[in-house]
Picture (cartoon, rainbow, N blue to C red):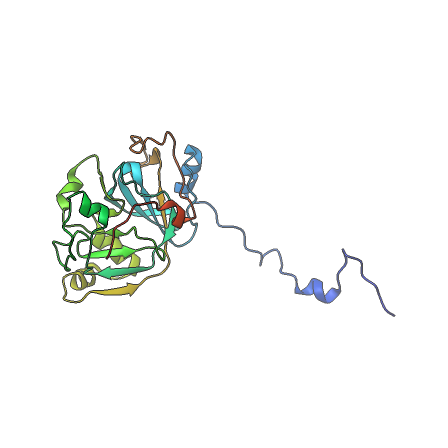
Length: 247
């Protein structure tokens, strides 16, 4: 006998193929740090699993996260109000050891840099290594030849790129290699890229943010935006004129 099934009906075989309640995975529980962000109204959603990098522009700080919890914090130098670091969501693409560098026309016109290609080495403005981000995105996370500037409290000083004080530890964390290997590549003779996992990178503008000791810090509105801003997803449109130029 032919049995016609209505839209809400199923066969015994179809029912048998459905996952049991025990097999249905519940969504990951938000980490304690994410719960604190939510409580404070910070417009940032961290991945519940895996790695992520957050740069809080007004705090002049980078934080590396794993499973929603901080693992590494570093001072950074961000773009000046005239050349602001864009508020965007992007990702790691590669690490370039011993980069070359050429300034942009605007950098040359300002008289800050000569019109030349800077060779690899400690005098290079990108330092000894740079973390390259999404395709076509000319903002990097990099070392610097002016490391003394990290001692300043106000560090909105760059043309948009992000100089990282603990660059070597960050690169070791990104590539899952030890510091000795990072330093060996950085102080070697070759310029080369190492492909990296597409770790999410959030360049945010958060005027309130939890600190390592559990306190909540408030930061000056360095770009005079008047509010906290979460990272935009369209990095191409958000990048404006900020750039690290050639690496």
